[in-house]
Image (tube, rainbow, N blue to C red; front, side, top):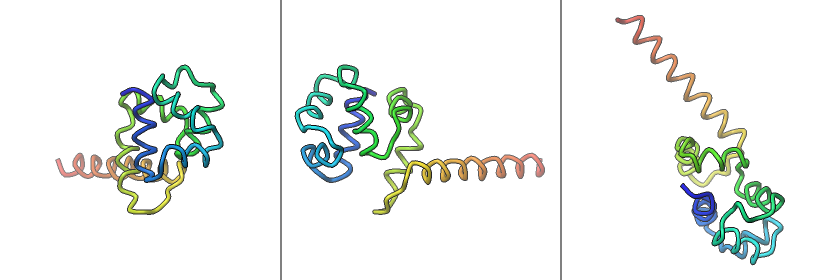
Length: 112
């Protein structure tokens, strides 16, 4: 998926206007609009960092989402039920899910 589309969707999920998000992130609304229409690759790294920080994600996570590798992250974030999870908390949740899966596999192996 295209990075600009991912950012646009994540901003939309926040439930605020692009202008309000840009202001909160510390960049001009025109810079955000340009990033979302012309592409993230044409934006300054400082602007990309500010947008990612405003969304509570890292640039690495954006890269992984664009590569289709972080469906879990998006799913967890979508089901936060009004709570504000930090990136670290989401990572802890992800690790816990991996632990539970490994326990399930061990249980299967011991039963078989």
